Image 1 (spheres, one colour):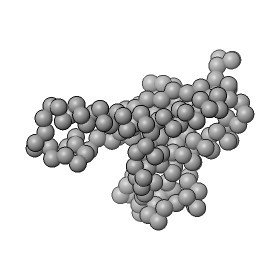
Image 2 (tube, rainbow, N blue to C red):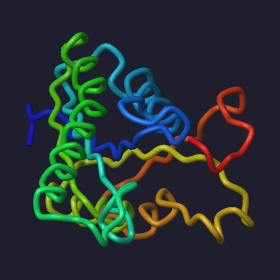
Image 3 (cartoon, one colour):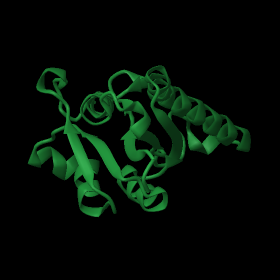
Length: 175
């Protein structure tokens, strides 16, 4: 419809190097690229939709021994995860508010590639922008790649933004 802003969804995650609340190199790069190359000065013409996916630990606990877990431990972990996710999203939302771009942000749990594609189907954005670590074929076999999966399965156009070579950490798996 005419007059409605173009809705750009972005999957964002935390840094594996710095941890919460720092955004990953790829997420920050994709966000900055979107602002510079798509939004530009047309801040009222776009609405950015930030999705952060928290990946549950295999046994549901981060560094806690699940043998000694109580129901209160689960509540505490869920509250801590939620707070960490909100802090991560806060940096993107605050930047949007500073420059006058409409935005929404939410948190889901699960496998990032599956959740992103599910949310694309549910929310129906005009475009999906995801960061890419630029892993080689050998690393992709072991680590997998969310961006490639989204390009193949998301039900909207997808732009993948590689991080710049000068931002790449020593181990490309890090972000």
